[in-house]
Length: 373
Image: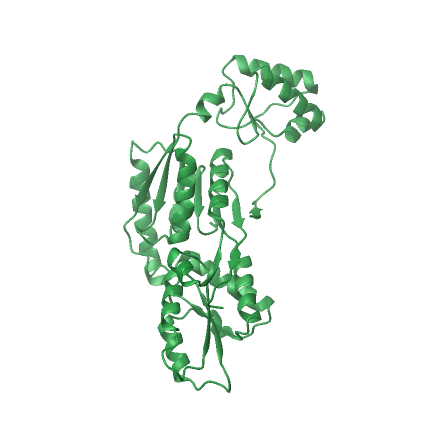
């Protein structure tokens, strides 16, 4: 499935790598470093062939040929990600690694992020590395409430301070779910160089993230509901959306503007109960009145599917339900839903850990059309 990388800045030349003149000086340097303890972080790859070519005034093709030849002589080593390292890096990078998956609250990560974490864990287990799931038992149900936000941030900071102080916590990588606040994580920038957030795009430049492209999801979902004849659309979920849902609500506003939808009321999340009450109190127009429900999470979609089943022979309203996430229950109910490829998400997480990249990876959503639209 296609993905989009959003980087904060273009790749820079490694200033710690010394410059020189010509391929012979480059070869001499690499041979010297291969035989001694080099002044270079062994966990870092050598600069790209393009960057090395700029430093030594030779072509990219010449650098590639030289590195290939030196690899055969075991002067350099090419990692699984295609980048070249010094030979001493191999034993460090290929050893079994230990990772931690940190969940803000047990059981609240949602089905889809949990499935992505599970897919990633299977990749790690296949390499004899290990993962540990750590839960922070804190209140996030009202995470969108500004009155409670400061308390949640403070609680997460206290938890992370104790977690990082644990002498047993020599982690090669940290995977955070979407419910960790950026304000809490920002207090530990030195710990985020090998950290990835899954489920939403982090605003922190010090950490990477892998998440659904919410702008593409909002546009795809609204356009589908509108094309199926649902001219009146409501956003269904908690009236105090959590962090991932808040990003989606903002994206829905941008998508509605692009589609020419001017009804601002649809952008305010409401509960399924409120939509049900509103629909039954109003007198339907002549014929069938169609109302589309864009559900922010799996629980809202399940509740909507249950409540909008026709209960009376006189029911004339036509409901359209679309979920911005998925789980097995929604699959059984054949609810129309937006999903991402779990395997592709796991692959990109693995790639970010291996390369040390601090990139926002946006996964393109796919639309599975079910009976509810």
